[in-house]
Each structure stands twice: as C-alpha cells, then as structure tokens.
Image 1 (cartoon, rainbow, N blue to C red):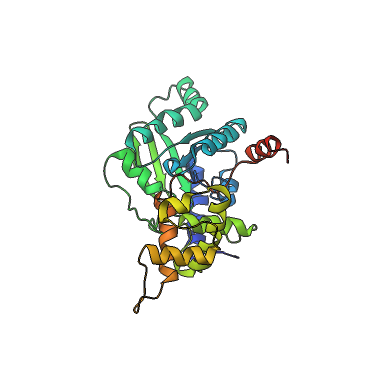
Image 2 (cartoon, rainbow, N blue to C red):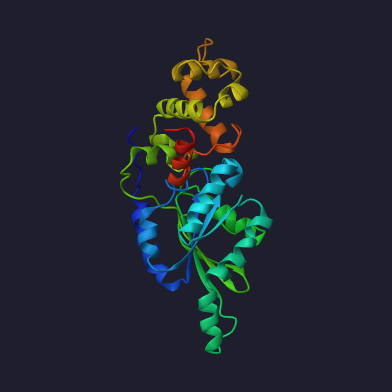
Length: 292
C-alpha cells in the first residue's frame, strides 16, 4: 500500500514550530512505543538541530514490553534520554520533570553561575498526529488543558502551558512529513490511527495487519475472535465479520466493518500488547539466535 497524508494545515504548523523552537531549551518528542522509528518525524529531527532532546515512548502499555526495552536501550546507546510510559498515568508523566531537568542540567548550571535562579525551562512537545501529546499534558497538569481525541488533527495551534513551577511547555499540533520514502512507514502509521481513516482502504490495510499478526503474534487472532488462523487474510476478515455479527441487511458479512473492528481492537489494546517494528540490533540478535 502506498499511503501518504499531508494536509495543508501541516505546512503552516511546521513553519510555526520552526519559529518557536528557537525559544525553547529542550524538545520533548513523543513517539508511539509500538512504532518508534516510523513515528519519528524526520522533519522534527531536522528542526531540533542541536537542541536538547527527550524522547517519550508513549502507549508503552499497548506495546510488547521486551521490544520496548530493546528500543530504550537503542536510544540510550545513541546518547538520548528516553522514558517509556502510558501518558494517561499521572504518576508516570510526573517523572518527565526530573528527566527534563537532567537533560537541561548544563543550562541550569550556567544560569546558576550567572546568578540567575528559578528561570523556567522552556520545553516544546512535538510529535506526529494522535501520538498522545494532549493526553500527556492533561494527565500531568491534572485537568483538561488541551483538547484530546482518538483521531489525528485535534490540536490546531501552538499554546504555552505551565507544566510546573520551573518548566513551561509549548504544545504543538501533530505533523507528518510530505512523503514517506518507505511504504511500510505509511502503513504502520495507518495501523495506529495517525493517518486519517477516510483516505485509507481499510480492508486492504486490515488484511496486511493480519499477515503481520500471523507471522509475529501467533494465536492473537484466534484468542480474540475464535477463528482459524490458517485461513487466508480475506477469509479471516469474513470469519471476524460473522463471529462479531458485523452483518449487512440480509445477513451478509460486512467485511469493511470487520476490518475497522480489527484496527480498533489493535489501537485500543484489545488484541494484547503488540509492537509493529523492532530496532535493528534486536533483529540481528534474533537472526543470530535462529542461525539465519
């Protein structure tokens, strides 16, 4: 599948981020723990430049724990501070303040030596659509400060939010990049809901997901839908439609509804903890262990 989605408002949002990033000391980049590589916007990385960076692997509760640990090791070996969390959990989000202070330790010390005390750290939070930025902010602050939604494009503009007495946070809209060089990137972003479903062939997308689940998470489909995983992807979607009563008038299986149900079950975690990509170091280790 060749998937690309870059609506016009993302161009202006990118320009605004480019302007505002000059005001910030550190960038908190939210990635989806299920697809850390595919959810890392290369435009954001270029905009960050030499700015301090903190990565949050959000929705870690939906991802395969062992694979998330491998991703944490990968980023730490690259010299990047990383936290894995469920941003709906306030206890977990509160750990971000200490991590920001750690990342900005040199800046804080420089201020102290100049006799500047209690100057707030200015942090920007950035990421792709639907990665959980607004959820993180609301969870940390303990009240609804930013609009949230389970679809991309909810945050429309940049806004400053007082995260704590010494950290001010700039919320930004989720942005993608104009062209996905790897078709697999667009597909993974579509799986997790960062692409507008209205432009997608949901049935084809779900059939590709079925292939991945059969290869990497055997018995997941059987456990959830009580179906035979030995069938083809199209037959599995048909069986999901029948078993979950996704039926049209006259009792005919509604394949598109079944496909949407499968995607929703993945996104919500009802399929269990599923990661959709691994760091190269883990792939190499698995291949060596299997004698490939």
